[in-house]
Length: 389
Image 1 (tube, rainbow, N blue to C red):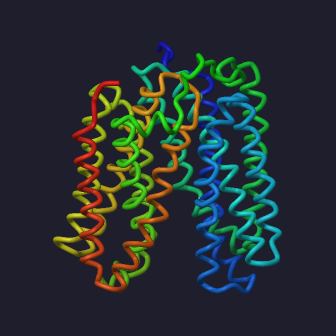
Image 2 (cartoon, one colour):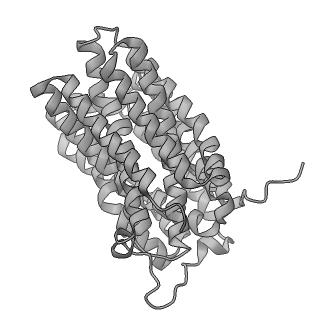
């Protein structure tokens, strides 16, 4: 069988790194609230510790994109992995809640540096005809790791809630070494992108482009609904309104992660074959349909179907939108790719806060109707965007 020409060696290395970091992230997830409570902090501080990672990513995405353009993807990627490894050890050694939050925030910085450096080089080096498949493979590797990580972490918490942080640090440290050695002779990773004077795909250039704004907003919708509300407000709705057993939370989240892991590579192939715009629009329609189910016929079956549609919507949206931003960049350096990565982080931070507050004050139905309006705006943005670069 002839080897797929689109599958660069660098993509294989990055997919492996993404898988390892996802497993490690999942390993840590069950341990974070347990260790936080052992440190004697309240529920508010536990929330801050969990949010610190996302905040660190949010702050570092754009600078990381600039750094990758200036110093080369391999250096920034390796440095980000080293930061992840070191701060994971420090997080496991934390003695106070504030120390824990600080080190988790710096972990987020390391995560942003490695991911934006890898993604920027992938988008630059991959031809448009196969960019969707590559993005789908890269993202799919993360979700495959995300499925298995929490189960392993739950077993480790029984030993000590600090152990998962040390295991994660070791795994990421090995990944940094492998990436540094394997990418040592890679020209596309070792050399920063070259650009003519003024030919930079910076944030100011990107936000003036309607297609970029549409892709950014659609990714924001996924962050709001899928990565935000699905893991925060919807489980509360399941327990308090639908009166279902708590075991359905774990079942639904694990099933959704597995479905998204399978759907990402397929979504990328569809984006290459049929174009970014129709796949992006279909992804937003899936998110809107999932929200509509939970509003119109609240039940356990609708809840599970909503999770499945959210997973399909996230896979279709993230691969097509990311590939489209790669098309827009045309290999130019700048902070726009990092800024694009903040879109889902913005949604992930705002979605649970706004939806949760409205649910508490006006009820879940009103909160989910607002989420539906956000998803509807995403559909409109996808349909209205330019399909050509």
